[in-house]
Image (cartoon, rainbow over all chains, first blue to last red; front, side):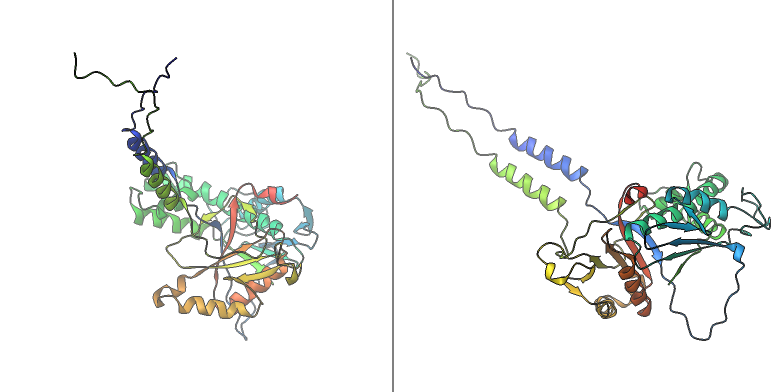
Length: 202
Length: 159
C-alpha cells in the first residue's frame, strides 16, 4: 500500500502569531519595582541644644523587647491591636483645638495631632520582621486618619472619592488628568493637619 | 493528456522553517523586555519582610542599596551572625560612611540631596545591626532611607 504524503502546513501566518504574542507581552509585562516604607532619619544632634519639654501625655511609647514582645504605654499588646490604639491616641483631641478630630477628648491622653508624638524603641535583639510590622502598623494608623481627612476635604477641592493614598499616587502619576497644584495643596494641608511625628529612640 | 498532472511521490514534505527566526526573535524581545539587570550578586540570605503601607521606590532619584543578612550557603566562613553587604562584598560597619561618600561622588551635584538609601534587610536579622547602620548613615547625613519590603499583610511576618 502506497504511503500518502502529508499535506504541507501553511506557515505564512506564523509570523503574525509571533508578533501578536510579542505585542501582548510587551504590553502586559511590568518590570518589577522595589517598594518599601520610606523614613527620614533625624539629623545628628548638635552639642548644646536645649532640651524640649514634652508632656508625658503627648507621648505614645511603643517598646519592642528582645523577645519580640510589644509594650505599648507600659502594657503588653498584640501587634494587630496596635493600629487601633495608635489611632485612638492621635485622634484624641484632649484640648479640643482640633476641629477635624473625632476622638474621645480624653484629657489624660494627647492634646491634638500636632502635639502627639509616637516614640518607638527597640532592643538590639528585636527581629527585623517584627520591627517592620510595627512600623507598618504605625504608618497605617497615620494613613487611616489622613484618608479620613482626605475624603472630607477632597470634595471641596474637586477630588471626590479620593483618599490620601490615592491622592499621593495620582500626584506622582504622569498620566493623571486634573489640577496637580491644587492636589498638592490638599496633600500638604492633610500632612500639616496629621503630621507624622514618629521618633525612634537610640 | 494534461500537463498539470500532480506528481505523486510518497516522500514526506519538509516542514517549513521560515518562521523559526520569528519565534526566536519573539523570545529574544520578550526576555529583553522582562529582565531586570541584577546589580549585585548576593552573598547573604535576603528574604524581605512584607508590609502593606508601602510606597514605590522612586527610581527618578538616585538609590543606593545596603544589604544585610546572614551569610548564605558557601560563605559560612564569614560566620552565622548577620553581616552587611555593600556592592559585591562583605563590609564592616565602618565602611558604610565611605560607601555613601563613594555613591555621592558618582552623582551629579544637584542630585546628591535626593539620594535614598534602600535597606534590604533579611527578616531574620536583628535590629542591632540595622540600628548601627542607621547611626552610621546619620553620621554622614544620609537621612532619606527606605526599608525595602515585599507587599503583603504585615502581620504574617510574626510567627
